[in-house]
Length: 187
Image 1: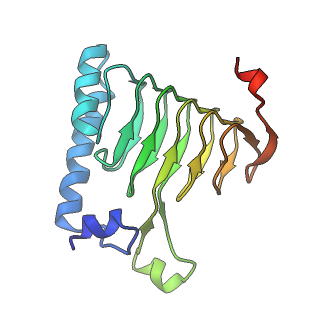
Image 2 (image 1 turned 90 degrees about the horizontal axis):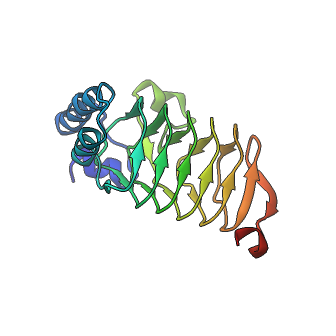
């Protein structure tokens, strides 16, 4: 197994591996181009080179930051506002019709509580999934291994450490259920 495959599988991996560095360097070049480009078609072309998938109907505002790009999958009619950061050492999938506020951070990567492991810069990654029709407020942090269920809303400035069920309003640090979103509110 390559170090990149180990990373995607959530195993410890060597972040300085040549293959990983090549993917990271390619992403850095594309991000530099993206964050200096204004034209919407040019931006879409760059994003489609950078990402695992990025449809024409979705928009990502600059500045945008990620580490690899090719591990990010964006659905149709999705909007990511400025200053979104994705530490995408595992798959980040964002569904259709999702709204992501400014300065939202997606953290697939983490480190051991064991200081010896951290001294070696060992990292492990778990995927993040955001299902269809979710709204994520500004300055939210979404940590590794989290799935946010369809039609849910995450209040601004929240830190999401665990899965969010569909049709839920979550907020706080750490984010907790504020209340369920009722069918009548969705009409």
